[in-house]
Amino acid sequence: TQLLEQSPQFLSIQEGENLTVYCNSSSVFSSLQWYRQEPGEGPVLLVTVVTGGEVKKLKRLTFQFGDARKDSSLHITAAQPGDTGLYLCAGVGNNAGNMLTFGGGTRLMVKP
Amino acid sequence: SQTIHQWPATLVQPVGSPLSLECTVEGTSNPNLYWYRQAAGRGLQLLFYSVGIGQISSEVPQNLSASRPQDRQFILSSKKLLLSDSGFYLCAWSAGSGTEAFFGQGTRLTVV
Image (cartoon, rainbow over all chains, first blue to last red; front, side, top):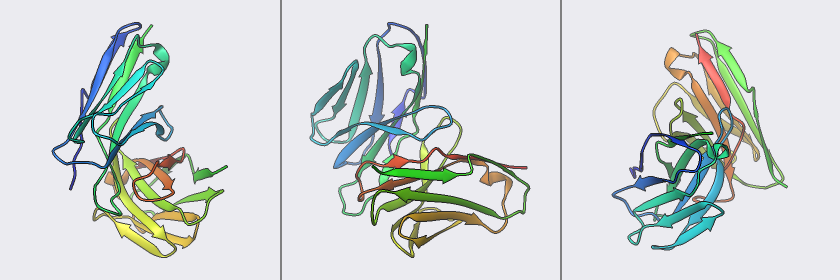
């Protein structure tokens, strides 16, 4: 079973601060996805990273896939209250037919 | 465009009662379908997935079962609910294994 560990589990910061969320595993993934979930709703995909070392930017969000494709990070610059939510990473295994494996999530609260 | 519908949004059921949650997808054919359970503010645990009509794979042994009577219909059931079945249940679909997952709005189940 491939496991993904996210850290921190909870993060409460002031508007304007920067933050980084980590997603780590001992397993290699063919790709990794990041989702954001609002309370009472389903997760929504933010980005998919595929190549080791890949960096993708989505406005103030920067996603990086580790060189060995075992870990990933999400960095938010100048966080805003609208960034509040649960951030989930999900890895796709190397074998055909593998399902997504989700991390435990990072709950972010950005205070105005 | 593709849409996914999941109902009901909330459900309160007594211990020992049956359960039936329904999920339907529109705008796509032969999707992979998934049932996840999510503990409060945490990651997603895959319960069942299906790659075709009548094909169900279970990820964890439990008090629940799933069925796929039609291509775009996925049902989560239980004959007798336990207190531990309480949680947030999410249905999702994807075009293939490891591709982006699209989630329903979720069902908040409380077993009392």
